[in-house]
Image (cartoon, rainbow, N blue to C red):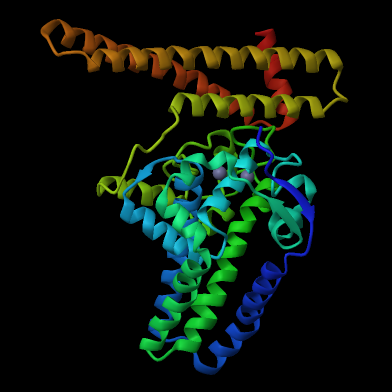
Length: 393
Ligand SMILES: [Zn+2]
Ligand SMILES: [Zn+2]
């Protein structure tokens, strides 16, 4: 068992001073500068570029690539993610990933480096300003073998100062706006990316929807997802951490998954890990069933016998839904196996029949799912009534 994530209370002055100075320059210097000089186009573009490049390097790089190995990336992409990741001043990729792996493994316990059980502000920022964490990297053997990751780790100060301060100020100076670049593209951007990242550990472990796991403190929060390139779908992420997507549904705002997908199309990323849609659906249905049970049980003033009967009916409906899902999944698996076999006249007939079976199983599931959706959308009293009517019928 890893001994890391042992921590003790201690003022981390380097972090406190850096955090305070960048925040003060951003909050006081930013508005003063904009009022006095306005924002020129090059300054605006540099700010936006650095916001996006460093923010995505944390989500696509530090998080989904280095911490979770949710896909493989071309060395050029790995370098760019390490370069702009360092510019975010959120520690080295090795340390970030090691602590994040502990966050998943020991979530909400003493060994979770940013456990929400120690409070909102501890999880948001306190854990790195007022606590010292022992990190031995036992859980990051794969990353320790990566020369580029280790170079960034050993020479982190150089990497971060060059990529996060010198390059943007130099680009600003070329366009005659060195001060503006320092205030906006360095301090303002660092402060904003900091708090966006921190919100995942604080807001997303306290507020939002438990879409896939009602027992997790991690929640899906669409607004934080909007601020963090898709990372706010944190309930899904804790349930399926190896998936390269966090916003798994096509309409969910997750530019990080879109970027990884585009990289794969360009041949710069491969082996994108996707959890089976059936497993994801099963997790969602289990969460919905548990939430519906909770809805019924919170109205304890109902006659006990009616609540029990309603709960029984709910469980039966859930079991039948899961059975239909299992039939659909099996039909889909069989069909996939048949389609992978060699094509002959006989196999074409088999393919045709397998496709029909999949369609039929999918249709059956859709019918029961539709009824389930209608049922669980009820408020607690109507839900009880609907279930009682169902049990009598
Ligand atoms: Zn988390
Ligand atoms: Zn994670």
